[in-house]
Length: 265
Image 1: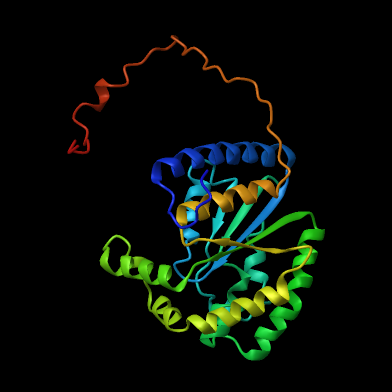
Image 2: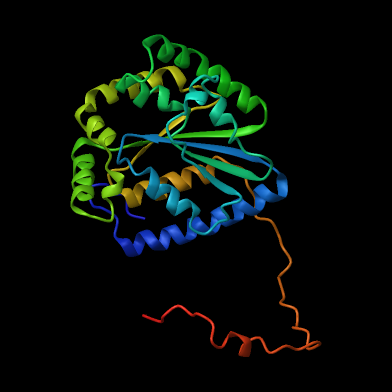
C-alpha cells in the first residue's frame, strides 16, 4: 500500500485492502466466540472525525451480536443522578463480544467540559478517577482499546460543508456540531488534557490521522487487529443437508391473490 499521505487513497485500492481486513475481522469474531474473550473499543475524536465511517467499515461483514455498537443519547434525569460511569458499564461486553463505543465516558473530558455541561470540579474528578476505573476494567479481564481520530481544521470544514450541501447527510449536522466548529481551540486543549491524564500503560491512547478517511480506516482496523492476539479457528466445512421429500406441500399456490409489493425495479 502506498505511503504517500499527500495523495488520498483510490477507492479500488481501498476496497481491496478493506476486503482483506474484513476477512481478518471475521476470524477475530470466530476467536472471540470460541474463547469467550471480551473487548471494549473506545472511539473518540472531534465532530466529523470519521467515527461512523470506521464503525461501518468494521461491522459491515460481522455479526451485530458479537460486534455491538453503542452510541448513547444524552443522559436522562435519572441517569444524571447515577454514578457517572454507570450507564456505560451497563453496555460492557459479556463473553465473546466486542463493544464499540461511538463516543464513550470520555464525553466528560470533551464535549461536556468544553460546552459547560459539567462543572470544572466534575471534569477534574473524571480525569483523576478515569485511569483507576480503566485499570479495574483491564484487571477484570476485558481488553480495552482506545483510539482518537485526528482530523485537521481544513478537512473538518470540508466535511461540514459537504453535510450542509447533501440532503442525505444533513441529519449529521446538529447545532452542537456547529458550536463545536466555533470552539476548535477549546476542543484542542481539552483533547491534550485528556491525553495527558488518561494515557496509561494499562489503557493507552492511540491516535489515527484521518484526513484521508480511507487510509485512516485501514490503519485503525489494522491496529485493532494487531492489539488482539486472535488466532484463526479451524472449522469443519458446512454442508447443506438434503431437503426432505416427505409431506411435500405446495407453498406457492396459497400466495396467489395475496398483497405483493409492486416490482418497481
